[in-house]
Length: 204
Length: 198
Image (cartoon, rainbow over all chains, first blue to last red; front, side, top):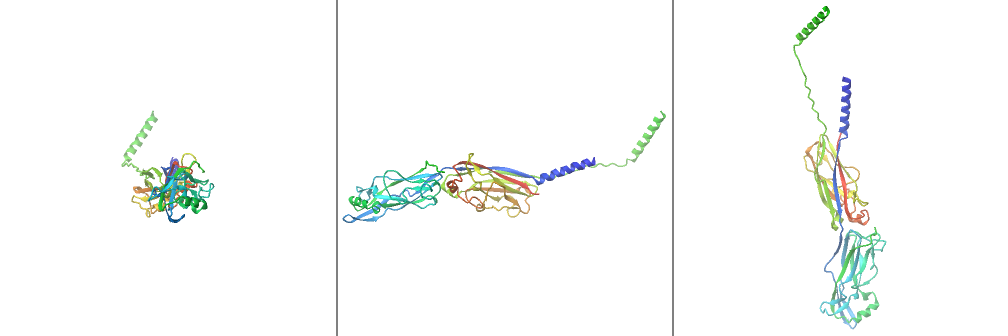
């Protein structure tokens, strides 16, 4: 009888030892992450195109003020496109608003400053104005579109400078138009739209 | 008949002898105190956490303070606390790598970090990036057995902040490179394992 009791006590001790050494408790915590859509254009809302011209002699003009460059950036959780258009077909004189110059008097290009490359459709961004001066027009023109590597990212990735140039500076033929406008001395101003939209091309 | 009388006589004699020898009596009451091992882990608040990314800054820099889970431990022996979780999933194929989730600890009970307990992750900047395999979060120091008033801790959650051993890429970068394939709601379950030390 004593022998059996010792045996049972031995088993109980063994079970107690095993349960003590392997004692664990698990508790679960649920964590949820919501990734919501973001599409933001960061730009000075007062940005506009303003330049000054003065006739110094017959058909000889001096540019008294160049249009300011416009810095902007895009922050987006999806692929995006960007287009530019003029708000009006003419620049108007600030001192004499009856003075008009067609908007294609000014051209522009977008210089990439971000980490997303703008080397074409096989990179992050296809930049239509890369190495090309585009004439400003009231027609919405898509300039930047996402490439195969996609253009998702923050301001570090998608940072740009919009630079304005007088068309005549690049094309000699425009000089004739320039002279034919009979521009009066004034500062001229015009507005432009930058339209940012989600891309319909999910390249991922 | 004669034999029966003799037997009865003998039985009477034995009974008489036995009664005469009973001078004292004693009984024993046995008391057994069983100190069984106790090990309890309680989540007292914050067992559901939500991190919402809805601005560029949050995608770029992460969310410093997602929330706090408060836990207490009751243990008759020394213990340690380990942590693991699977990648976040949207229920389809997309995932968020789990090391985007970070955690750091504060002791709010009598047992303090650096004495009774040890923890290498005591500030946002040194957050532990959670992984799918167990990692030590809080360990025994000079002896951490005790009740809930001794062992009370805040587990501070952070996400996408690239601190400590967390994922070094921003949420934006991971969206851009396709690591996170799409937007939406992702979930995971974090497992906290309390183990009694032998």
